[in-house]
Length: 397
Image (cartoon, rainbow, N blue to C red):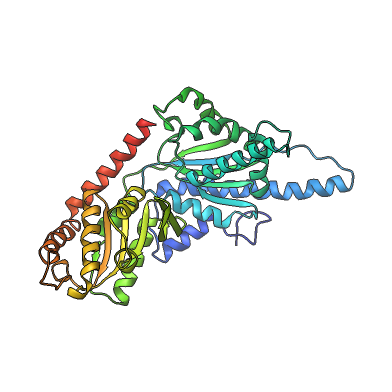
């Protein structure tokens, strides 16, 4: 039962959080509690606004005017990775009593915005609309579909995004949209050193005016702690190993939406069975039983930094082609400094039993690399390299 008046059908974030702590799903953190209280307060304000809208409609019906309500101020939570930001926002999203709500990765949302802007411009060319400025109608569309927006990993690295954010969110907030977002950086550090940043800076003020800013930094990195304990090469194959792979996948994806994806390459598509954020998951057959080559593996490595591969079998001379592709796959992942999480029939040294051809001695290198890629030194180096790459990319934009 909720502690909010009029919200007896809804549980609070704090109640759900305490329940998960009591069942051992998570460990309570005082820093998270402050954010939880802010989220519960926001749920109360949103519910009150929703009830006020209904009352206003009835008031109009019976000829009574009601004073306009102040817009609901959202919440922007920032902090380093692994602090529990996504988990808390997901609890809020599940519990907020609103039908028209949307949870999205911020980059996916902005891709949708640019698509809508382009479609509006095409309508303008065809004479189907007289609105020359696409931002207001796009904002109205978005607000009609969802007036509570939840963004995971709010970050700005694209100049095209930076140039429209101020006007877009000004329009969204005018439409009564409530924003809840998580980010690794404070608003003042968004798009730092980005091209033409002066044109982006007004968005920071708009954001601070329409969302409460809270920090969730602390000494404990929960995701890092789980990743540090996580084995990345699991054997032998079987239900227990499959279950451990699933648990590792849940840790790496950290609550992000998992769905199939495609990678365009030279006029064809590479199918990705499961993807979330910068992690992708394939079976051995997906990658090595199909006619894929170096370009395919490089395209995958360019899109993702963590690759899960399920059910690597022992390969005999009869699976020579599969062995060749597996050798090439591992070489690519190694050279691109990717993190590999794999389930296999046996240890790396025994995965190939063939004795004829170059594969027999080339596989020794593959086994050695698979062993190295399990080491803590390798995983720490991969993590540091990926963090540096993200910073370099942001500086180049």
